[in-house]
Image (cartoon, rainbow, N blue to C red; front, side):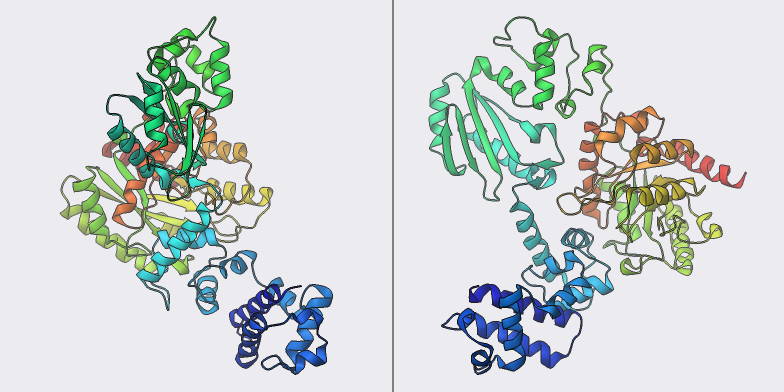
Length: 561
């Protein structure tokens, strides 16, 4: 065993000792030993304990630990500390700029146990308020985590959306008259992206190919047939396909849909596809209604397209309001009035549903009962003051471990709507998670089930649930299911939207905004909803103000009846 791996073990031991507030003198001694071992001009593996004890900065106790590590591959004290430290916290120690003291605050004060939750907390602006942190530190941590996420070759759609269109614009600048379009995962608007595909159709394919091949658009360029492959500065893989103009729409179709989807469509076409003049013609030849790119995932919508019954997919302009948002009353950045005015004047919405955290979410400045009443007074005042706009009194009530909601019934009854969400005790079996959710759904005060699985894309899997049982319970109890629009969540997953719709369950595209800029995440919620085949008729916040008011009042009326 070389010195560097041994030094890393001792460095980790010293960090864990500091994290768990072990004897500070002993902790410093181990940290110094880690540094010393790393710099030794000889390998410790060939030394006896007695020889190591004589090395300056090691001493008797550390020497014994080195021998134990060499003989067993570990250190008993290290294993004991690892056993009482969440795996995600240990991983967090590898993030540049966060020492054990800051990690202790993140873990013990903010209740964050892994890197995914930490990244989400940075997006929610929760680190700014913590002791020893500030906006600059928060942003630095966020950038480091984004770099780590990119290292696995996968990106959130929101992370590549801008870069993809920037690259397309650069290609457009080189070939203004050529046909060109984004294809693949990005055009299908998948939540996770591993490659950006662009198809270019030119009258002279070779000239276009040569020009792109010698350009500086991509890094690490390789050429294969009519493919120019490389990567962007952020590490995203790119494949540019150059074809003759006559073959452009065929190539765009072939490179947009998933393999299963393309195969299913081609099977329905008799004869050669040849040189179609549009994608619409391809679907027409297959006796199918033209399918938006978002729906070209697998074969789920093929039968619907056969009968010309594809839904008119929801658009961002269809949304009339924003529900599930957080203000400075809990862990938001903007005041309630600032958020309302922004929604009214900038986004041209009709209503805002505020739903700050409930009292159990102490890490997010959850509202005590007294503060709930104070916030309601402010909302009443603002609703008189703001013309042509309405603020609904909501709360994001924690679903407690037994499935009950935060706050007693007399307080829950004061809200216009309640988003019920799980934020704690996430390590559950599928049966436990499903039972916990269903109990909350059956609570007559629950209006919306928030981010049903608690997942954080590329960061945290989320707890397993029996989707059908949960959705069926929502149908039975007239509970709406959230499509959380935060690009890290997009939960309820689009693959379950059609099942929910088939059961008569409405969905709500909620930004979960913690600042005014967060409202723009509704764009990503709409994208996820479109992949799930959602039409505006099945979306709660596509209802105009009068209709959603009526819906909330009927729900409350059913409780008191």
